[in-house]
Length: 296
Length: 180
Image 1 (cartoon, each protein chain N blue to C red):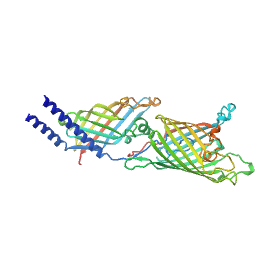
Image 2 (cartoon, each protein chain N blue to C red):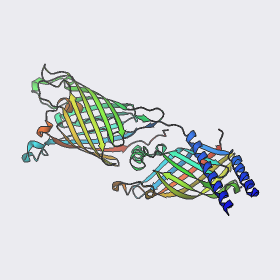
Image 3 (cartoon, chains in turn yellow, purple):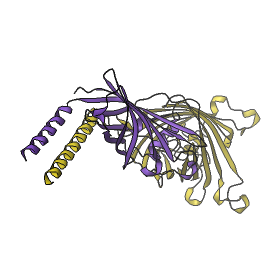
Image 4 (tube, rainbow over the protein chains, first blue to last red):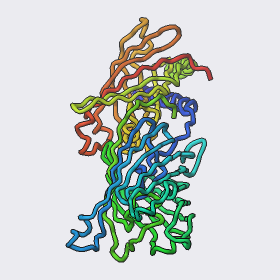
């Protein structure tokens, strides 16, 4: 009997060894794919500004953003809710890396267009790469008639341009951090003392508190702000909630504008004085094209 | 006593001989399908690795990120939220094709039993399969179902009606002789 047990044991052991051998062959033959890190941020915006994320090819994103008035405006304005401004934008992904968008803000009746290109992607595996890098460029045209009829500015005088390098790293599935060197050019500025070229650097983060809910923060430090208006650095803190094809963000910020040249260079609110605008971003993605076969 | 040792040695030796012959593929196909009242979701993977030896042992593995969905966002949610492929990049199966040595038709029906490992959870699987010996290929096809809950995959309440509780898995693995 003992001998049978021994036999069975050895046979069993043998089979186990064999399975291990088969698995070892699979491990050896498995191509060492570098894996691109996805989902550094939930959406294309951290809060006010852009994240490194772009949408996949063929996705049309419809983005509606709201900022109400200042919370410290009191009960008469229902803590800012009476005063609302809106931006809606259509943002189309021509490729996985290239998005072109058009938007319109009710604040100063501003039209904006941007191009966003995802140049480098964070990867693990054989070709390790530590960060994601996205280039962003936008042009905006202010169309509000805030001038005397005889003093009408030329089209080009109401243009402003923003260029950004978005550099981000997803440290782990719960923590991502981004740095955004920014250059803004105004074709026309309020007074001759004001710089036409404004430089700023932004910092943004996402801290996930569950699979679908995150705390986001974003801060832009303006190096050479306008002289004639009393501006502040833009700060935004909020919550992001992702549900299927929707992304919903609740925001508290001292900026009224939702476009880069506005919130980076022209923020007048002082966050810690209570000049806080409550707002939200809602994004809905529409799939206009099916995915192509792609090897990871 | 001697007889036993002889038997033992013979079996060991036999096994060694058999182990020379292995059949292998890098381009196996596995898909899964979820049907619900709201929508049907299908994902396909054409880069499945599978190997069998002449004793009927089989080992299969695939990269979760190689599953292709019709909608890019679904794929993103599948990887990031449900299957957590950053933590569990691979699905693996290790098992035995029953009566493999006795299969002598061109097309045979048999059963494969083994352990499926997804999302860090091991689960015993037993499924019918068709073994087809054709042009020096060994083609294994079949389908089976798994319960989402068995693999500790949490589906949030907002999409609970979009994703089936039972997922149908279909496989087609065309093995060719493995040359080292």
